[in-house]
Image: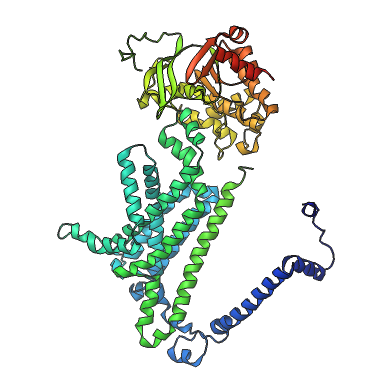
Length: 367
Length: 261
């Protein structure tokens, strides 16, 4: 203990001296840590150079099969040549500026909404942004008005489809999950039972089953002639599925808020909904930011499963591109690496935002 | 408001105008545990009552039934002439007039002190924000903590937090205040600052029911002291008689235990 209690030595000497001191303390502190350090370095030396060689040094961007055949490294030419197919799927080629613009608008609204934590002035703009943005995106994607040709949503695909499915999924699954969590805690037996049964049944089956049910079974219950759009069914399936998971996350948060907070709300004559909105949920939701974002990341990746009901999400369009010409098929590693990189970028941003949000909301409190 | 009607307990006298709380043959069970047994109690307007007793005697449970944080199974409770039963409207009406100060303060950690105070006036009393802020600052000054208005509860000491909690209750301008062991969770050096505020309140004529072991406080301000044990009111008397001439052996034992140091 006495050693720890000493003040840390002052940083003195040249940069080299400090670097040596730092390494001794952090990398070569005892024989066991020295072995770990050397082992890690050896592993990285073994792993990184071949990857760099393959992905950068020996790679080509040449968008032809001939160009790719000449190099021993990665054929990014596959991505280069099929970029528009990968990004926009089967959306009519000449109209692909529309999903691009829709995607940009959507990203803008999302960034604007998330940025409201940093810039409180944006808070009032969130609802107007969505109220205006969603119709704009719909018009761009569907068209049929303002001289835009109508594009059936079975032609939608690629990154815009993935982003739309997941952001609409978040927007609807969040409140629905919240209601389920509150329902599960309700004193009213009917509401409680319905919530519990719903959560347990949906959590108990794979998403793929829910999507199949939505796509194959659900239409059987509809009267003849009534059809519900395939995309809409997939969207509803994703929402219903994610809400069940979120409900359990939120329940954890609600249970972590001390009993006394509920009692204080009651004793001040606040109604149930006032107490929930003003006292309980702000605390409960903050506690569960990490698992909530975890669920959203999960959902974002799960949207790839819509491919089984015939929709081409971002991963689906990569497969589509690989199949578009047999000559490209052998470059599947490059295709999947590209898809993985985009997925990683988005998921990592979500994780980073979650950490930032937690830090930001904790400022000033609980010191 | 609900007027007293005939009940199974027999002839019930209608609550008198003077009595702001009437508890009539009230019983409560937790499962098989009979936590409150045949409680009869009337509290007049402006009366200050201290309730003491060993832990588990039901004293906290008793005052928590008076704003329906706890239910009861038989008998009845009238608060300000309103029957406190299952009726949600009645419960809300009672809670608007009765405020509670808790052992663990139960301030809202995600709001500033000022926001803690203005929440109920704004949402329950529908008071304009400006007016609520003025009201809050007035009561913060009264509990001598106005300079902390923009801090968060977590930045205050226990004594300061409890004074904020008292001010938060006062902002509802209640007719009755319930105190549930308000100084038990405090460090000893902070007990006085909270008791001082409570004494001031008592002297201004607030109707108060305090569950506390602060016998000095009881002697100074209480009109009546109630001793509870095993879910029953064992003894109820003015402070002088209660401390100098307790009748029940259980009261004598209890007093000898807590006054011996």
